[in-house]
Amino acid sequence: MFDALTTKFNSVFKSLSGRGRITEANVSDAMREVRKALLEADVNYGVAKDFCKTVTQAALGADVVKSLHPGQVMVKIVNDELTKLMGPVDTNIYYVSPGPTVIMLAGLQGCGKTTTAAKLAKYLIAKGKKPMMIADDLQRPAAIDQLISLGEQTGVEVYSETSKDAVRVAKNGVKHAKKNGYDVVLLDTAGRLHIDEEMMDEVANVAKAVTPQQIFLVCDSMTGQDAVNSAKEFNERLELDGVILTKLDGDARGGAALSIKAVTGKPIKFIGVGEKLDKLEEFHPDRMASRILGMGDVVTLVEKAQEHFDEEESKKLQKKMAKGTFGFDDFLKQMQAMKKMGGMTSMLKLLPGIGSQLGDMDVDDGEVAKMEGIVHSMTKSERSNPDLIDASRRRRIAKGCGRGLTDVASLIKTFKRSRDMMKTVSAGGLGGLKGLLSGKMDMSSMMQGGKKIKQRSKRKRVIVRGKKKKRR
Image (cartoon, rainbow, N blue to C red):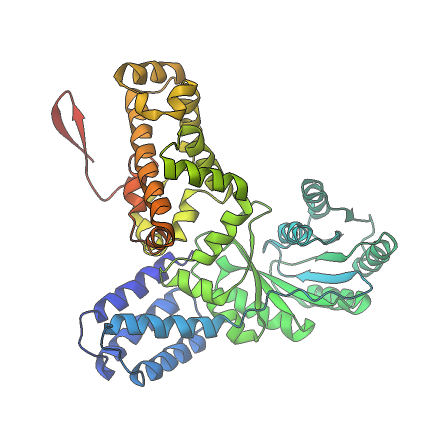
């Protein structure tokens, strides 16, 4: 997400570092590169032009703090302006009483409306609501079956009919929800491959019939500027309350996220960052700006950790780390929890100073399964006290799990580096934690004990029977 844009911004800031002061000339050069980067990311031309103008004015009017370099001043200015461009924060869903609150999802075919309906239902359940979905996409083949299947996965009822009258199905669905005490109704409507009058008339008639409290437009961020154009046209007919951007985990150039609020005036409510039903995040402009500038997103990282790490278990682990009794079973639990949080790659990208360095790295989450096999081949005493594992024990472990000696050795090395890092964080208290979150602790070096990160751009050296051998 935004990798190309992040790289370009970092290049611009680097070019400014080391200069004594910000001048009109070097700001002009920097903004020329920024404008080019924004346009390459498929940002609306008018938005890119206005953004660069605003940043230039702010930069030339800023008092450069003597202790900071111009590049750092520009990072602050650009971060603030990006946050303003995509903001303010508006992730609220406004509920009515008595219910149900009707939320209508509109958008083009293939944008991810049906999956987003299920993701939103799962999100609402976590908020203590009782949602129901209405299968009102009567145009796309198997759309109803897909929503029913997703409803079974989330434990949410799906209302459907064999009728081809979208207005009738929507009205009957809302009546069913009222009768059965549902808090929220999620209305999945039909789309087309492109905007046409038939589709717009249908969604407008459905909206008029059920008077939804909120209408969210679902946009595919992969389509870039086209997503912004469709949002503009939908807004003219439906009076949107917000936008949900999907597929931001893919090869999205980011243009839609940066343009859609400025062009339509409607806030981005949520973003889809994966195919799984728990991959829907509230949209926070300040966090997204931080990610775009390669500064990570510690707040989101902490929120994910709170969701997947048990508090009591974390306290026990902290005590073990402080005492130096952290073992392989504990290590494996941490790796499995990280996998649930979205995998090692997504976690590392949220860390300041690390996410921007992952461009040439390959973090393989499939290594967790290999690690489990190796750990389960150890005895209980070996798992609790890894320092017991000598050469003969390594051979036995390798034979037991069907892996090579190098795999076992790599895991032990990775574990020891992780243990040392965790012990430092634990011993350092808040200071140690700040060191980790600021990117000063070398997480990438820690991970290179195993084969999860492979730096393609660098040569590795291995020892083969006492001789050094180059390996690309």
